[in-house]
Image 1 (cartoon, rainbow, N blue to C red):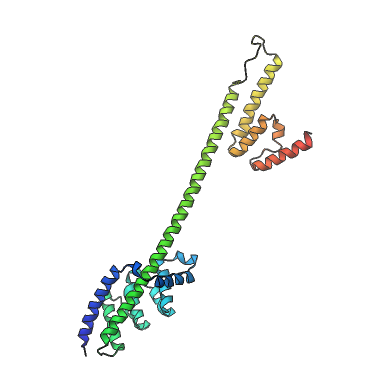
Image 2: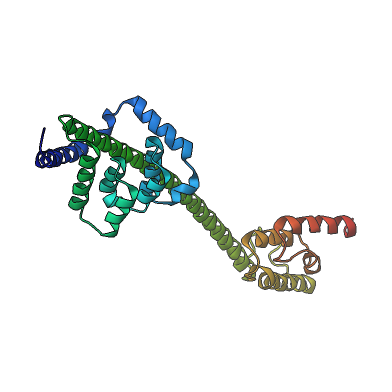
Length: 292
């Protein structure tokens, strides 16, 4: 029969070996059947609401479901910090009573002290015999395998969250680009409209020269031209310079003005509170009732 000092020494050696092996383990070497089992469990309890909590806590929940760890022990593990989960999980998995684990955490023991207490519990629970070494090794290997599965679950969720957030960022970027393009088009249209107004205001005439250049315009023609110039300035000040009108509304009203609608007629349906479609419908109603 081996003495207790030999058990402790062997356990510490195997713990170190297990930590090294766990660090080197390649998750790709796990059997596909085992991975499918884990992923099935993830899909079984997955919900979008749970993705708002830390990923490692969600992964821990999946692992506890797979190992059928009692709910009160799972709650104990959820209350731990991620960096100390390794040692507390070993305690839970290797059968240390929950009350004793809570007592150790309350004393804020070091990781080495906690591992020594877990080993002491195993020695008390398992009769000292030639087979005790093998039993300790089996328990330690099972704990390492469970922690490796936990890491696989955690990384799976991290990958899912990363891809989901990338898709959201891409969608937001697309919306921003489309918005910027729309704003540029609107600015170009406004600039074009303002250019037309300036040309009209300066009295530029793009029509062909009159055939009879020596013929002086009559007083009536002077009066009509002056009146049109005043109306253009009035239209610009009343509608195009009004910031309450959108560029679409200004363009609609300018088209109506170009179609020789008077200010009295425009006033019947022009309003910044109405959409272009609503103003267009009011214009058609007015024309059917009063211009036919």
